[in-house]
Image (tube, rainbow, N blue to C red; front, side, top):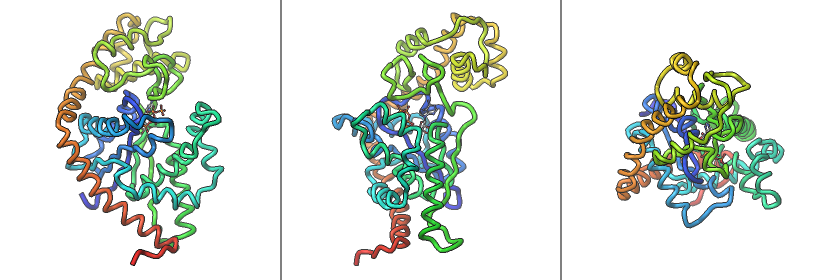
Length: 337
Ligand code: AQP
């Protein structure tokens, strides 16, 4: 694996992973993993930046790790681990906090949107989320970060932090932290809500009908697609800004059926919604059934899942601690005797 560029990415254990997480992130990881040395993290420290349930955090964390395996993450190319098992993530966050200007964080769109929902109770952790995310990526000196479109701004901030840190603490032409690049897929980078084609599909949307979860039963999938928002126009089309639902549902059909955009456009151009919806339902069920079967098998073998995460922690920690030591030395810290 050495000599390959490194990839880092993660999903929060904040609820049921949905088609947006799959098509915007996890499926792309699976597709590219053989070309890279990959670290896929369950980012459970991020999960507490919004209110969370302590009684389900550990279970949800295991479930996301099992989803990674069920979707096809291959341990011969990739390391799967849990963020809170590697304390260097928290420690580097503190160090980088101290060089990050407050107004950079206040400008983040995700912070503004989520802070609005939290009202007066907005926590410091929510504001600091992007510095924790920068630390996740930088500890592994990642070259590429495959994410959905919504994370692009956080990646730009990570790059700003790298430049600032290297400028302040590294010798000229000997950077300590590596500048990572986002890898954002062309299609699926922004899967939209089933109840509003102008809003991103999101775990935190209060309506279950707005998203298809990877673990939804065939009946739930059928019900959600039956009730999803459409428009009164016959014939479906891509890329018409007046018809966001048509574009979103056709894109889901394209990505999950494996057909090309042209094939789907031709096939569906004269279809009514009544004909298209059962076709999409069938396609989603067929795509998710093998993932769900594999997920159940992994969850039924707790010992195996624990061993994956134990090995992952060991591999991740070795690299993370090395970067942390370099950062601390550059900032002038003494090492313990
Ligand atoms: N709708 C989406 N379309 C494409 N990609 C998406 N991602 C999330 N939603 C979509 C990508 O999934 C990865 C993991 O996301 P996360 O678990 O960190 O959660 P998130 O970005 O906060 O999105 P959620 O899951 O929908 O949560 P909320 O409700 O908090 O907005 C990331 O790569 C993300 O880009």
